[in-house]
Image (tube, rainbow, N blue to C red):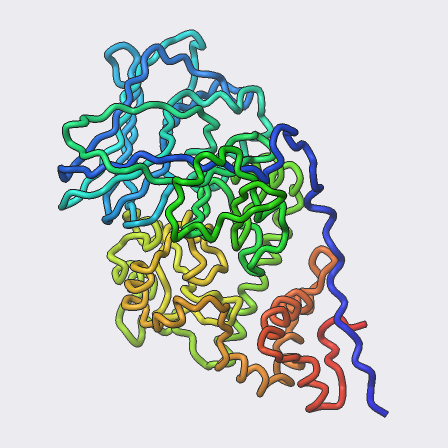
Length: 500
């Protein structure tokens, strides 16, 4: 009689991470939007400056401490690759107190959000400061510039909010300029250097917590601006609250060009915007502070250790299945350290944002195709700064908001990965490694997962269970059941993982 195959028991669940509807502002639901016009110009010179002079600045003490922040930034789009520099000079009288120069690469035909700030220890709360803020664009040829909502001013939102301090400094650059919670500001520029073009458009969606209307890019939805996608992995999003937004200013529907009218639908007799991936109800910054920080405190060191353990196990598994450890042997075969090779191949710059990586230690090496889908770390890796690598995480290249078509073509040339794979809308499993795993399934359960490190119980969970669960989630997409394969070969079920 055949032995009954029992189903895998998941490790004990964590406590609730999110509570729907907690601390919602009540003004907006997150399912409203406005269609807004953008400023568009033909810049007639190779350099162009947007500037703002702030006088009589009095800083607000933030986080319940003697700390003040002056922030600036905005949303930009150009028709050519442009070098953008934000410069902030803070003065007390005629004395320069603080200076910041931040450089950003703007990729052609791609909306970006960018911001920068200076901090000051406030010793005299009544002291006044002045600031000169410059946003400088540089190209080799004239270019078209489009922008929406520029910001400049003293950050006040975090006054008397000490609990937000740690979250504020966690991956801050991913949230600028929205993290400042500033009102839009008018910047000055020399109109003799530009030719006015017809207005462009953006769709701005409401946040159900702060009630701000922030941009989403319906022409390239995975380019998250003010909001993160809701159903990126399981699109199209079927959740109406997250994917359908009532247009509050229908008189502006005409701003949307005909080729994008597919996003406009009629619901309940009124025009709505419909998106494919959907967006979160709360803006990225409110999600950071109101959801992720206070309602997800359990994303703690233990969970990060779990993720790290899974990643290390996947790396080791692929190396042992293929018999190749490119990183370890690279210096012996190529005469250069692997890290230096990737750093130099990408011209010592982050491929995502273009930031200069002055040292190879400033670089994170990204699995261009995600490790979790069984793609190894090899010469096809990408050089990213730590911020971009954190943002890309386990996304495929075509899902990453900083990679447009032009960037994917360049990435294909640099990495040797066929453009067809980089452009694929499907998440591709490394079939070669999956077949090796199928062939060596007994070794996987009886040897690999039987090792002492994988049989350890950490925080109530067996490491082998965590590894198998993550692996099984991917292999089911190609109809590969490792437990079934093991039973077919042995007539038994594996004992190194937890089964009912």
